[in-house]
Amino acid sequence: MAEYSLIIVVVVAALGIWIYNRLVKDRNQVSNAWSDIDVQLKRRHDLVPQLVTVVKTYADYEKATMTAVTELRVRSEAASHLPEKAALEDEMQVSLHRLIVVAEDYPDLKADRNFRQLQTELTEVEDHLQYARRFYNGAVRILNTRIDSFPHMLVARSLGFQPAEFFAVDGAEEREAPQVELH
Image (tube, rainbow, N blue to C red; front, side):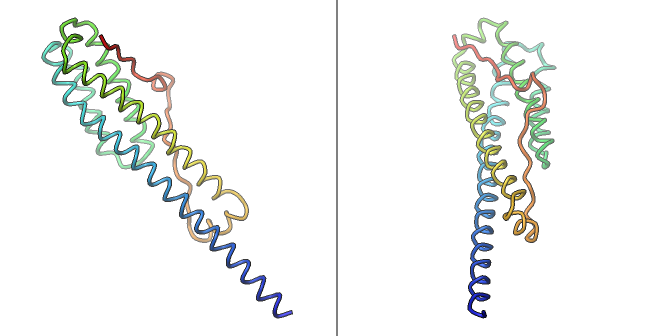
């Protein structure tokens, strides 16, 4: 009888360790995926001043649009809570789209080599950011499912694992990627 009790304790302990390691792996995957998003956001933020400068030389009276983009960049970099940062980044995407649309009204600007290069880089960043968001949200889904599923929930709750937040897009307008025309 004591042998069976020992075997059961060993099996339960091994299962607990295995579940704990899966939860840690999933949590680390979420952190890694967030890091990928953060890198893409940094790339986008680095492009903003360059884009504003190039557009400003051609469209000086469009200050409101350029100021909005710059302010969103500053607010997003200061945001520490994921839903706030996601909302600001969605606004940033829309504002960048507006900035590109403004540029379409200036043939000299559309022909500018620096502007075209920045459009290309922005398109690449937006593509990478979209992929990084999907990867992050997939990692969050896996972690959250494990935390809420039996038997993982027993280990997760007892060891304080918390569900992660999705990087969500709220409005229909934010769901659309900026359209960038290359001429």
